[in-house]
Amino acid sequence: MNTRPLLRPFLLWALAACLLLPACVNRQAPRAASKVGGTLAVAAFTQPQFDWELLAGYIPDNTPQVDAKVLADLDERLGAGLAANKKLAALPARLTRQCQEIAVFEQKGSRSSALKYWLEVGACMGADAILVPQLIYLAERDGSEMSVRTPASVILDLFLVDVKNQALAGRFHFDETQLSLTENLLDAGKFVRRGGKWITAAQLAGEGIEAGLTELGLK
Image (cartoon, rainbow, N blue to C red; front, side, top):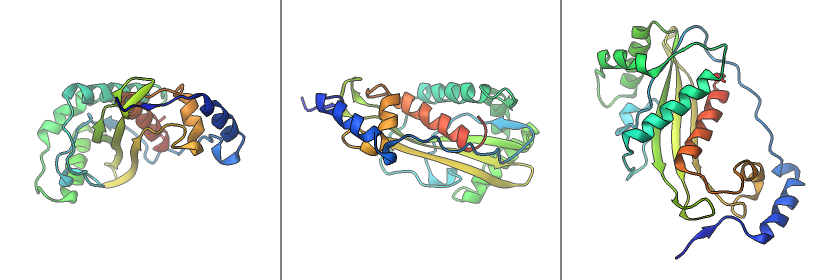
């Protein structure tokens, strides 16, 4: 069986050497200031099937459809991340769904239709802004924590829509396929944080969500 072992004896030497190099030191990005104020509504994770459903970006060819349980898990991870910010009182996705059922796309095939739709949802919620999370692609790892045939891969977007000013206030794009230490020596810090293991797609998506909330100033 062709596997991709993550840990080998010589990697300990490589890791130690890498950590001594300035380029390999993990530096935390400066925390971004929140781009909008007031009441924040949060939408549930969706997996768009057409590019016109996106506020930006595109959908890769042959993207597999994920199970509803995957989206529900991402909703929980997003909710937990937002709840960690005690200064933020976000309206949860379970409340936003009601307004999503009321608002409809008026012009399919247009990116402006997607923005208009989410502006209508936010207005229905009486929110100043709405956070729109979209899962673009997810592939589960094929293997175990110690060795894989195919690593986990995730693409997701977090969009911050400014309802008050009728505009897209911010976007965080996450696109990562986990790599071994030998494949990515310049990111040894991430290798250490993951305990030298191959993580699941849900865990990888969770990292993306945490990074996105920080970048958008919501954590």
